[in-house]
Each structure stands twice: as structure tokens, then as C-alpha cells.
Image (tube, rainbow over all chains, first blue to last red; front, side):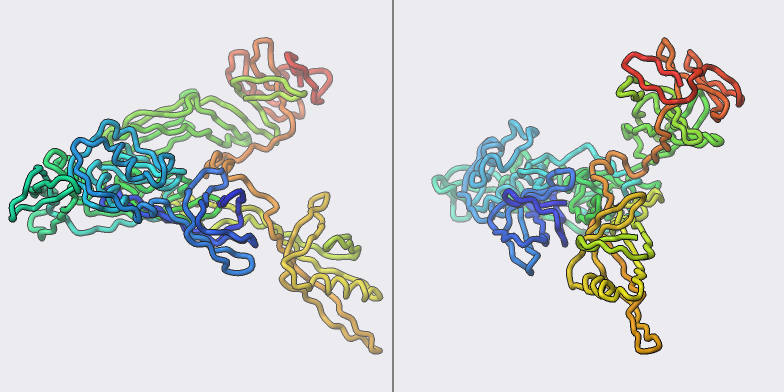
Length: 423
Length: 206
């Protein structure tokens, strides 16, 4: 890993801590940060950007240095935070929205940081907001927008802040990237979710009315509780309800969709914690399919990834909440001229549209070593509940005998500087 | 045998032991598919030297001792490596020897031993290369330096079987694999088995 500050890149780092978080329920906007000790005699100032890269020059974070202190003659301790933190200090005036484009509201929220500081997903093109926003910080208003839209904030692995819809297509964390052994944590059942919806009529309120003002007009506020019961709760479970109120962008038109969105999370009680090899592949906010053991899988959203670094990177992923998914076995058979040369079994979710790379197969037949190449680079299909078998054909590519490389088949070859170049 | 410490070359008998350590990071570990993920950071060299400075060369002996025991982060060494030498920046954690009292008041420090640990890896791989290869690579097939093959007019590859070459198969014009008995001859050149320089479009006969 390395850090670029100004024109200087520092690659002698210790104590690098980076544990980004995302909230797909819209209940908060996490402020992500990293901290590191940089081995240098340079003087490093706070109040500038620090860019965290891996050794492939992939950007992991672009954060604002809030703390830079010399720990000793050779070490500067740096702490840098997402610029979302700056949204806490700027207040927005109250406003009554009536079909206001989401893009305009978000633009106002990020006005101080600039248009290049964020990106609103085009999934929200044409979306509007109706309701009342009181005087509140930019950060709180952003959190309300995410809650109502079913969106989350991604402030890592990019040079800008992204506002994204909560994903539907899961990424698979394969067995070979999952450390031994994930753990499941069972929480309490939520028996019902309640959300309060608000409606407004412009007028002069009576003394018993609840009212709001945007500084120009006065609006009479009425509210109504909407709820959804968890039908998966066993009989006799003690009541445990969640109440969400005070978000006055929730109205009678969007409340059912909001209830449906958030109940997906609140009605589940199982959380998974696992360690995975993670070279900037699995992000907080991602929808994930993961293994909890060799034959069991779960599906949920990554809330936090706590990284540890070596040549590659590892992260402890908190995935919550999850569904345990139905799995079946996919048997891959690899054959050469009708003879089975290898096979590989995969446990995958039923209905999963798999695409698996066909590997090169290296085998010793007697004293000769052969490498078999797949005719097709990948195998794809859908896994059935009763299991599936997929047969892939191979050709002989290379053989090695007594230290001599024998080319057995080739796609193309050319002569170059006295050498046969085979591909 | 010669070795160099901080640009000063010393020519004295010594025993040098070499250890290469392929150091893995803390994130190595057992995966859920029961394979082991070995996250290798690089290869570090460790040399152990025992120097035999002959009697009468006390000034040199003491100079080497004083040089090695400087409280510095590391030294520049030139040491034997393979059929050549290697330059490494390494640290010396300790130097040991013994005081020998001889008859007639002749006393000597002898048996100097020290260990050099390279500060930087002598071999590394770029992260992009490691990830492209994956965690379960097919190891490279030993490469003899040239390929024994024959390409016919139609561009098919053939293997050539002859005495002294222990190959037990060949591919015919249709690309089918056939087994051969030792001694069978399909085609060969009278020139023998020398590597032939080729220009574009040439057929190669080995």
C-alpha cells in the first residue's frame, strides 16, 4: 500500500487502519477514515487530501487529512477522513418539497464540496421528493434522502462520494477466498416495523394543530403510522418493534415502498462475520453471497470491512442481516477425448447463474507431464434444485518429458529471432 | 575467499552459510476449502559468516570487528551468490568471537562469527502479477531452452522420435495423438539435434 500527499508518494507505512462502513438501511451516513504511520522525515501538514493506493495503483480512499503529527524523528502519524464530515457543519434552511428532483436536492447538499465531489447514480434519474425538510445539517438531509430512496453512500475506493441504490445482484465470495471459519450471530426477532408518514396542507393552523414553516409559508402537519408485521416470526415470540418517525420526507405515497425496503433488513436476525481475501473486490454496501461452511451459504449486505494488509489484503466482513439460501451441487467434469481427466464440485445457490473459469489442468501420466487447455474459457449455466452437471472438453496443450517442453497443440505460432513463439 | 563490507574488501578464509527465507505475511492462513493461502511478501537472504583471520593479522581482525560493531542500521555487503556475487544492504545484530590465551603471553581474539540479515527482499513479485496468477497457480513446466518440434506444410506440429530422445508419442497430420516405441523414427534431419536459427516463414527441422 502507499499514500500520496501532494506530489509525494510514501510507501513505507506501518499501522495502517482502514475499516470502511456503509449503511444500506439509510439510518446513518458513516464518516469513513483511515489512519497510518508514515516513515518519513518530511513535514506533512493537515488540511489537504491524502490518497490511499494499493501496489497496483488502485485507489482505495481519497480523504482529507485532519491530523498529522510527528510521532518521532522518522514517523508522522496521519489521520484522514471522508469529506462527508464537512457536511455536518453546514446547515440548510427548512424547505417544503413538492415533486422536487432528487438531483437538485443532492446538488444543494454537496454545494460546498462541489459537483465533482459526488456522483448520483442514474438509477435516481427522474426521481422526486415530496415532504418537509426542517433546518438541518447537509449530512442529516443526505441521510433522509437515502432513507426515502432506498439508497446508500459509498465513500471509498473512489475519488468521489457515490449515492447508489441498494443492490439486487449479489457478488459471490468463493470458498477459496474465505478463511476458516465464518461465524453466525443470531439476534433478536423484530416482530413489526413502524414508519410514520406525514402530509402537509398550507394554511393557518388551529391551536391544536401541529404545523411547520419554511420561513415563508405555514403548513398544517398530519401524520399516520404505517406498519408491517414480520410473518416469519415463530408463534409466542415476544413483541419487539422498531419505530421510525420524524423523517418528514416520508409521505403516504412512498411509505409502503419504504416499509418494504427496510423490512428486508429489520426482519432478519442472522448476521455473518467472516474473513476474506479482499483486494478491493468486496465493498461495504455490496450484496453478497458467502459460504458459512462448505455446504451452506448466506446472502446479505456487507456493513463493514476491516482490512489487514500483507502482499495482498484481507478483510473481516460484517454481513448483516442475512438469509440462509438453498444450495445445490454443481459438478464440473473436465474431459479429454471422452475420458474424464478431472472434476470439481461446487456448492452454489439454487437458481444461481454461474460462470466459472475452466482451469488449465496439469497432470502426470506416467513420467510425462501434460497440461490440458479448455476448449472454452468459461462454463456457464443455471443451477437446479436437484443439482447440475456440466461437462467441459479439453485439448492437450503442453507436455514435458525429461526436461523437454513439447508443444502438442497451438492456436498460432510464429518465428521470431530464431525462436518459435507459441500461443 | 573475498567479501566486502561498506566498500572495504577483505580476503580471508571464511565459511559462509546462506539461507533464503520466503517470508509470508500475517494474513496467510487456512481457507474454507481447506487450502492454505500463502501470502508471500518476498525472499530475504540471511548469511552466516565465520572468518578465519590468520595469526599475525591482528590489525585487520580488529578493523573488521570495529566495522561490524558500528551502531548503524545496516552495512553494504558484497557476498558470494551462485556463480557470482550479490550486493545486499543488511543488518548485523551481533558479532561473536573468543579470547584465546596462548602460552608465553600471546593472546588472540579469534573465531569471529556474525549473521547478515538483508534489509530488503532480494526477490519480490508485483501484486498485479500475483493476482493474475491466482492463488493456485500451475507451476511452470521446466524449460529445456528450446522446443523439439516439426511443423509441416499445413502448419501441423509434429514431434520427432529418435534414438536418445525419450518421447513416447507423436501427433499426426490430423492432430491425433499416437504412441511410439523407443527407436521409431518419424522424421529427423541429418544435421542432428542442433538448434536451428529460423527466419519468418521457415519450416523448422530438429
